[in-house]
Image (cartoon, rainbow over all chains, first blue to last red; front, side, top):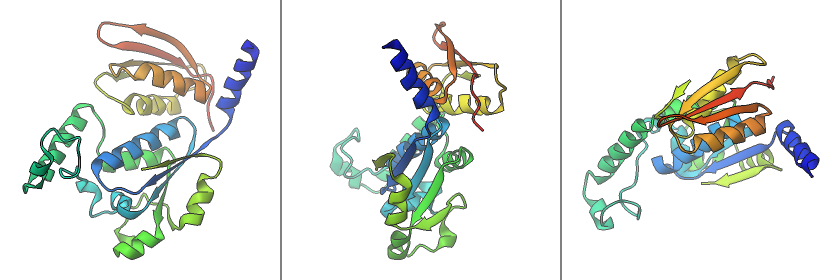
Length: 166
Length: 73
């Protein structure tokens, strides 16, 4: 029995498993977990792919990556009555609060996390349909993005691995 | 490596940076206050084929020793 679990451990160490993270949301509270899982997966020897679709594409948009926000409306986790979230400035305030807390826990900024992910070998794929629909030219994407692909390529990248949809 | 005050994935990414520049047989010492660090680093060591040599509770932080027993190309 002990031998068997030993064997399984060794096997686990040997295999390179895949991880595909599909990011469809473009708010700070969605982008951070995606990047945290991606970078951690890469350090564990996984082949990691991130696919950016719909609002997730904002995360790799040069003009938006530096200003990811936390939604103050429609976010029941906010420590206040939801309707107050509609007051102008609330989203900015919630975002500043979250940024402050992240900095306190020494979590790198989102652009820094992308550089780290890239350095660890994470592959970044932008969704071609989203680029067309949202009117985002390739030049607007951060340089860490590897390529622009469709769903078939994305699915083949994740085949046989873990897929996480955010 | 002093990762006190740094939370997931900080300790793991710092450990991995040290691991990349380490030689076989080197021991990496990491200090962390993140309560998840112990389990996370144990999982990393198992997955990457390295050895979790020692984990000790110090005052207010945990001291983790990882021996590099396997290098990935």
